[in-house]
Image (tube, rainbow, N blue to C red; front, side, top):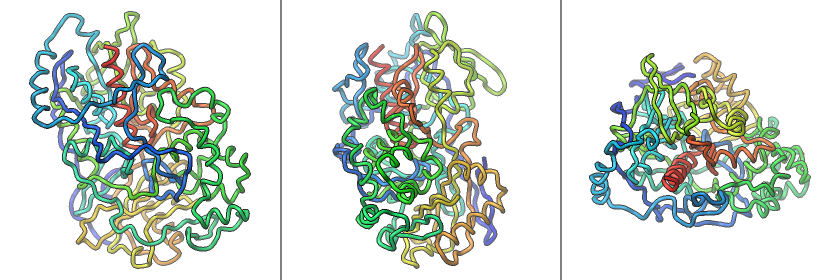
Length: 568
């Protein structure tokens, strides 16, 4: 894993990588009150619920947030509903996940009322809530619990908050090392941004020109030459931008509601056993069509990705609409959330063991600066990637939950940011968005330069074996490799770039990869992750309908908080 200034053959950048604003370490005891915030549903930014039956439009933007795929609008109107307490987990609770809008004045009034709720009482261990992980899932879970008067002890193993959201500022440029894009239907991200007064701007402010795809050495564009190897029907669908719809439309009618708790239901088990490649082949897709439909980050996963996970992504996310980015960097949101939790957030506190005791109380072993201590809690929320959770000793969990944790694979991903003296792609009538079946995989422009600044930024996201190899390269070798790949992909000279930063997320022991891949036959894992195991709850994008997105992390954190409150 590498973060920071790397290869710079053409010029020396000024500045240093931005460090997250320090969070004052502090541990809340039992039910200590923390700052209270209520997240409004933000109806102005919510996308209306649409029937997820007709995928359309070329996928252009996914980045760390997941690999590209053609898709259509279909994000749900709201954050979904949680199961009724003690009832059927598939039966939706009509109550919204978050309450009605709340003014800042009312927020302060509720904060004052939390003081009494934080007083010590008998059975403090049974009532204590510990959240492990200060990424978006952990932060949103803690905030929602605070709002209802529940004290939370939030533990973060690293020295920063944000998880897979990490922003770097260098030489007047702002770039994302992790999650980059916010789609129109990602209502939870927009609602939090509204709450904290964070503006959004298009990730690609120019958004002009032609998108490129490189397949088996052939450079193609949606409005250009027809790729070779397609059947006549596929060629027509490609020209009309309907290639994905040609093969996924029949499936969409069978999916049901991907936001319903307990999805995918057992009656989809037959489909669940199929990989993306197997499903497309069963529909008669040619090898050339499969290659086009899985360009970019999906190219190495066609046999390992379950068709249901892919279809859900296509049905929920509108990838054809412009994506946005938080002005000044996506870490503006994680820092705002962390500041709201001052007094209950502790960094540098690594949980080494979670032991569920016979009395239903969890005993945690926590390492701080080389010293071990223990803490008991009646509720523990593990809001870390499952790949990182596997590094924690887990005792007393059910065998099914252990299997779910152990058998969920995370995508290896290496993300790099390159700066250029100009936006050369605009001058050539290109958008800068590129997908290939080569190791380069995906490229997109990033809005990290001030509008008056002529410099341009391209972000590269590589997954799988290509990510492993790229992440293992030295700085100079990596910079040269990426430059050569861009020259081949763009089909002409490319100015020499400056490699600003590279982040190999699979090499970070506290993260373990990019996003979870639910393979054929793993629908049961997705269902199981939504349910508690004794005192342990799992939160994160892996336990949401949006694996790999900031939206999924926030949605999951809120949902778990409301489930905990309902069962109190």
